Structures are given as C-alpha cells and as structure tokens.
Image 1 (cartoon, protein in one colour):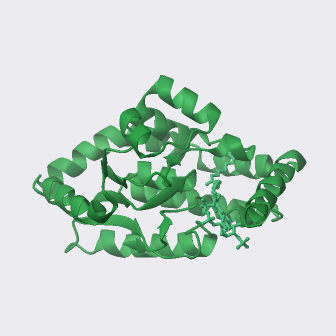
Image 2 (cartoon, helix red, strand yellow):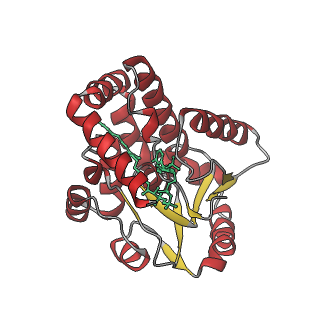
Length: 243
Ligand SMILES: CC/C=C\CC/C=C/CC(=O)SCCNC(=O)CCNC(=O)[C@H](O)C(C)(C)COP(=O)(O)OP(=O)(O)OC[C@H]1O[C@@H](n2cnc3c(N)ncnc32)[C@H](O)[C@@H]1OP(=O)(O)O
C-alpha cells in the first residue's frame, strides 16, 4: 500500500478515510494475508496528522477528525493481516504512530530521515495511546525521554533504541520488507493472529473503553487558545523554512 497524499502524506480527514476504506477492503478479502505500508512521496513517509485539521477548526470538525485518527490506529494496530512498515522517509508524530502500529519496521538508512513522537516540539502532547505504543516498543525509560524531548531519531539511533527493527540501504527497503513478509507469512495465520491479539488487545482496550472521553479530551485540548497559538507558530515556522 503506497501512501500518496502530496506533498507530505499528512493524514488529513480525507486521506484517513481513504486509508480506512482501503484497509477494510484488504482485511475483508481473504486472498490477502499481509500488507506493506510505504510512501509514494519522495523522502517523506508521513508528516503525521494534518495540522490544518486541528488549527482554526470548530469542535465538531475536530471531534470527527479525532474519531478517524482513532479508527485508523485501531484498524492498523489490531489488523489480522501481517503489517510491515517500509519507511522510506521522515516519519514524525502521527507518521511514527502509524509505523509503530505495524508488526515490523524497516527504515531506509538516509541521514535526512528520522522517526519519533515529536509532539512536544509543537507545544502539544502525545495522547496516552500514542505513548502506550511507544512504551511497548522501546520501554518506559527510553519513551519517557523521547516523548518529553520530542526526539526524532535518525536511522542509527532509531535502530539502537528499537523504534525500528531494521535499517537498510534506501534501495533495499522494499525488498527487505518483502523478505520479512515471507518470514511472517510462514507462520500459520490463526496462531499468529491470536498471538498478536493477545499481545496488543490490552493496549487497544485502554482506548476502546474510553473512546468518547478521549475525543472530548482532544477537542477541549486542541480548542484552547494557547494550543491554537502554538499550532499557529509551528505552521508559520514551516512556511518560513521555505524562505
Ligand atoms: C490530547 C491530545 C492532543 C493532541 C494530540 C495531537 C497529535 C498530533 C500528532 C501529529 O501528528 S502532529 C503533526 C506533526 N508533524 C510534524 O511535526 C511534521 C511537520 N512537517 C515537517 O516537519 C516538514 O513539512 C517535513 C519534514 C515533513 C517535510 O519537509 P519539506 O519537504 O521541506 O516540506 P515543507 O515543510 O515545505 O512542507 C510542504 C507543505 O506541507 C505542509 N505540511 C507539512 N507538514 C504538515 C502537517 N503535518 N500538516 C499539515 N500540513 C503540513 C507545509 O506547511 C507546507 O505547506 P505549504 O502550504 O507552505 O506548501
């Protein structure tokens, strides 16, 4: 599955909806046993959640958006398919969450690429379920530092901390992802799926038990003047970077 939402594969409401529909089709088609998620945008896996869906929007829109974000996470995280991330570009925040929700992550060895939950750098906070997935992946202490400091790990650090499973030359990302897929598909589906569910369900349940409260919390938080100001400053910085 090649994500194509130029210029930066930001996860807009429209794009999230498209991804959800595609994933549902694949999940329901019993001829598919696995998917490799990668990007069609050169140098960018995904710039994460679309800031324009959270900036200057009314509460109803923010609530609709957040529900779609939750939905995508639950669908990928609990998918019965083998999900491999072929991360061929930078992958901050929501892009990192998407990567972390895969069963295995292969990152291209390019010093321009980085991956991490950088929310604090934007003046916002990673929701508890983003945090849970990071803690599950790299451990409590490493997650504590990474989250507070908004670390974006370059490839060698990403491998060392365990936020990705493998770093390979850029031209080998797709072939490596395919070899990894073959290894995972060698396991009987029912055994692998039930085991995946056993490991992941408690984390997903934490959100499933309080989805509405999580939406309300997001809407309250994102609507604050101070948070809107932080987003404004960050968006301006992105614009100025272009010169
Ligand atoms: C209680 C819980 C509360 C809140 C939780 C909220 C959680 C949020 C999680 C997130 O995912 S927030 C998003 C975090 N993402 C980022 O910090 C990435 C920001 N983008 C970049 O750093 C760069 O754009 C890039 C490194 C990805 C690519 O750089 P480059 O190739 O130089 O492109 P540009 O910077 O020129 O960007 C092109 C174009 O795209 C716009 N854009 C970039 N990222 C986003 C985004 N995430 N959402 C919306 N739009 C984005 C950028 O502003 C440019 O727009 P122009 O109109 O100026 O062309």
